[in-house]
Image (cartoon, rainbow, N blue to C red; front, side):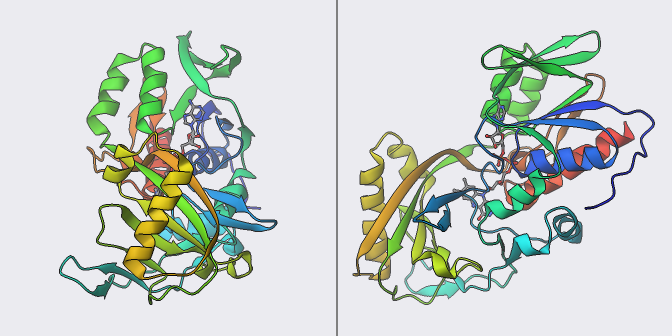
Length: 339
Ligand SMILES: Cc1cc2nc3c(=O)[nH]c(=O)nc-3n(C[C@H](O)[C@H](O)[C@H](O)COP(=O)(O)OP(=O)(O)OC[C@H]3O[C@@H](n4cnc5c(N)ncnc54)[C@H](O)[C@@H]3O)c2cc1C
């Protein structure tokens, strides 16, 4: 385990709201500086949109983020140090897109990484380094005597902290700030947030081979935005022939309340039309993401109010991807240290 040092003049109590990548990175880096950090997560476990669903007896399928880039060597070093080399690996697939004028073209070459043997392997490993309270939805912050008191949705006191970092997606962050009467920060969030786009995700177990030479591709389709052969990712070879189909944001918006079984049928139908797959589908599941990817907003990287001890980090502040979530959190913690 990496050595935790206390090079900070004063130890602070910091609350981190959300345990997606941005929350876990913030918590780990603050702990590394010697601060006392508590992480609160509304869901059952950590990871946020780095998400995998269990299928069959032992398998799992990635229904959120499909892969991530590691363009910044510091991100690589962070993952190696805190998650470990065995929790992520390059996905050596072939990636392409369908040209509007017909035919298929490969995407430009770039290393794409995935968690192994599932996307959540990274967040699970990172979460081992932090104190995480799961199934606690933080609803309000109260400022009192220079401290923050956190209250959960059931209005129970979750403790007093010197500083708070919110890493929830912008709609949730805004709700917390609104309900806490923090209007100036709400304005900053609305200025910085791009549009969060929804996404219906379907995982389908295909019994036969797909007649297309790509493991991940973007079709030219009003219905399907992205398709991936989950079984082609490292560590998933034994889990069955699972594929993941993501709907376009526009199509998802028109079908937000549609029955999940019907969603699965429609996306699988679009997949058959595009790929020519005529084989059987033996299992299928659908999952609705209300907030999947963000369009570029103001992109300030992070938000930090040193006088109030209140910060925000997340992908939506730094380009809307997994690596952006890391970058946003790392830069926020660096700014807090300088303060
Ligand atoms: C379908 C889909 C496909 C994607 N594909 C890719 C891709 O291929 N490549 C890529 O780089 N990125 C992709 N992304 C985006 C990527 O998943 C995100 O950029 C990244 O995971 C965001 O991390 P985060 O920590 O900023 O936010 P999140 O992962 O959303 O974490 C926020 C956490 O806050 C918690 N939370 C919210 N409100 C509260 C509250 N009040 N109290 C306590 N906890 C709270 C949430 O439960 C969540 O765990 C995709 C996302 C989706 C959904």
